[in-house]
Image 1 (tube, rainbow, N blue to C red):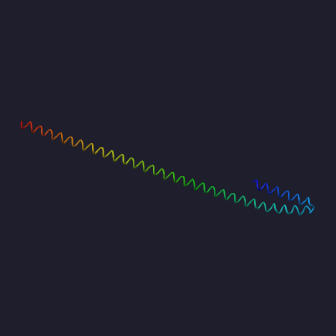
Image 2 (tube, rainbow, N blue to C red):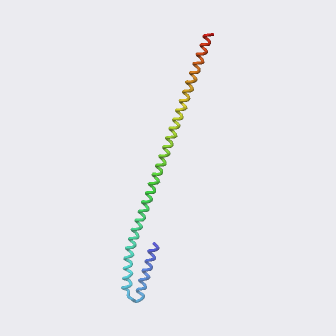
Image 3 (cartoon, rainbow, N blue to C red):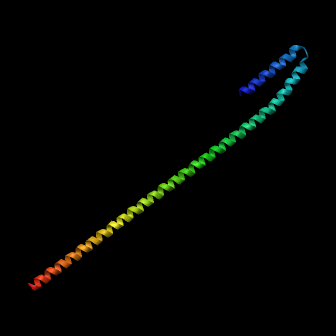
Length: 126
């Protein structure tokens, strides 16, 4: 923005000088108009370049957003895997505990039966 304004001011000053020096209005204006037309093309080119730069920036932003999404998805997958693992381990521990409890009960029952049988044999003998 500022650069363009600066160029315009310079061109206006050059036109003024051309008229004031007495070389004639035609020559001074002609040069000014020629420069103005070229400047218009330059402005258009600059605008196009700026648009292209903006498009590139937007593309980069989109790429970054996609990368962020992928990272988040991966992180979520990891969390789910951890949760599943924890649940599986919990389940396995629970199963092992239940097995131990059953074994203990069976052992106790067997002991009681043996003890009762021994007592019955002793009473039968006595």
